[in-house]
Length: 205
Ligand SMILES: [Zn+2]
Image: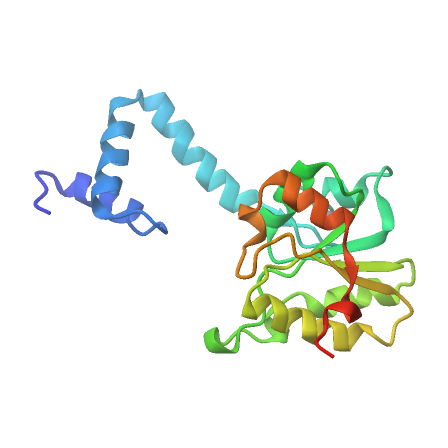
């Protein structure tokens, strides 16, 4: 791409670093922003720097939050005896959108993936175990993607959790194999939480 301006080229370069954004799309976005007023462009860039500078991760569930403890963990309306274990904040948003779940969450910040060099220590597993040791938790629901990484992670966690006196379930496989939680439609996802099954039942005998 031959740019008539180095400034334009730099901006396009930054946008094209985003996932799924090629050079052409990046150029379109940058030209679009250029048409906006200075105030609008400043608002755009400020929202990103403010986000990065101020965002927090909930000390309890590790969900992205504006405060040290997120609103879900703080809410007295939530059932604090159930924890739904998810991969990242997108899954929390997807499950919240179903309005079918009133418990708490635990965000792992990834899945175990030996191929990508991601092991249990890279996830928030220790802190999940700490929460369970605190004694209030009666049920853990695994809502992880039906992929090799999701299954590996559940298998690992199940081994760690089975000595605690808690119910362990996984969301029902209304989610297609290979399916990512965040792409499931709300009805399917809501139903798969409501009809969750004991994890033991899902293991091949
Ligand atoms: Zn939280």
